[in-house]
Image (tube, rainbow, N blue to C red):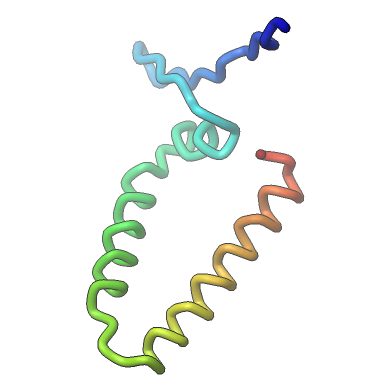
Length: 81
């Protein structure tokens, strides 16, 4: 069975051309949000490393659950997956 050939996504910035994995990656690269994403990842990592108690863990879990729910709502709304 032949595998369907997908058209790759590209972002052009001046003379540079970057390949994007999916539509969300395309938007991040097109709007130059990569530094913001890296900053948020490092902040989230720092917060998760410093969880010391169960109530803090529950609060962080609730926050992450809400964040993930909003992300999937965004993906579904704009059909980025």
